[in-house]
Image (cartoon, rainbow, N blue to C red):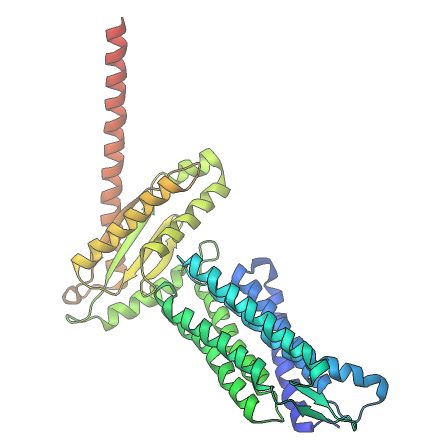
Length: 396
């Protein structure tokens, strides 16, 4: 018979996973790509628990024994399949991902996953991973450590990948991604040396709860269209920066407004207008670091808060943004060109500016640059008309 303690633990974990799947399914119409991968992870994890419970029954009728054996096979193999899915989940969180490194590591992980599955499947013939004696009692094989070591090796490789790419991941999200595999790694070690409870699955369920909570928090803090933070998050974060600012530790901010955004909507439609906002958010992410706070201020305006509180660092950040904008306009085949006006300032604690006053300063500086842009465009149009008139006069 199956242990009551074991069954209670598994049922609790399965209910927890089923709840996360249900809550995720309620948001199916607005689910992002990374959340699809997370949903797949939850489904695989739930099936693994079911298979593990089925595989743990003892003294079953002969007709049910096949299901017990299949449960063990499925649980071990699905444990391995979780790892490449999680790797894909991580990759969609990273802006400016090194695609070559991703492809190489993914191929290695797939090969190790296939090797692990083949080793587990082969135990039907050699009993090296697990076997049942003539009384139907389960035993671990002498090479049970091999598939578990391969799984551990893959998780170590992914942890290293996360650390290498950490500058491209939001700082708060970096910790949860790292934590998601760290706990299962501990569970895998316990599973290898302690028999009786599915430590690997329990730890994976706990880690999934951490990521799920993070996803829920991000959905409340994030602008749906662009994927950057929303206005409420901006106000809260900037208020925190203002209240904790000092002469030794200040910050700087950038307010950015798309030029001629209405003309993009009018000429190409609102779908292209939305695409322009998404493209702008993407190039800002590529230009800045994971420590910089990017939010949609409203409409076609974005606000960026930089950790550095000096003018030199602020100008460097603006230069990177403009460089990414130029590269985008040159390399992307879009119906429009992205340009924007920027207002920027370093917060001075001595001025005792409130949130409203500091945002107003940024807004004023941004509109000063926007007026300058409009004046230059008007002068260029007038100059072009004079030039055309002059050419026409020469022809006559």
